[in-house]
Image (cartoon, rainbow, N blue to C red; front, side):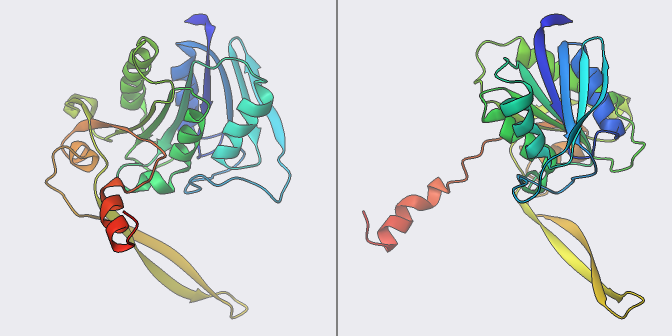
Length: 260
């Protein structure tokens, strides 16, 4: 462990989740750790921030080389609170967001609070890694995610040629470790979630709805995609960025609008 190195850890499943504890332990092998995580589950919050309510923070624990806080906000709130207040300008070498209970591959990267936090951290010119597994259960096995996460963290920290704003979306298949074939650098799979709503009534006769959904993969045979990698026993590593400009449409749009 490099005592001069500072690693920041956050997540979207809450400070008491098993995946968060695994991420903190992963990080402390590389340096001092300061962690801020939501007080309760904030899955699916994407890049949401809290504007109209106060935020409440408390220190959960402190021990040699590790400080853990909970915050009554979203994952992105946790990052902003840490970088703009708690750390008060201190240099951070790396951010780890996770380990998330459930995959954040394909279009799920847009809904994910885990990846919202990772991308927010990259805005501070700090390399960030969002780390997830495909198992949603509370008692999921995070051993493989820690192992591969450790490899990735070590490589990122040991490189002097990667951009400071690097943001990685890493997803680990929840299969026995001996069946994981390795890691692949991938692109995001093209596909979408399609929802189904179940209507019911509460005891007072008020209708309410439960939403469920399924992912529709539009390119299941695309071997360069993250969904293919996960389905075929690989850890998927996708570099992501916030720029959502559809560059391929710009010239044609200019022609249609008679701008060019």
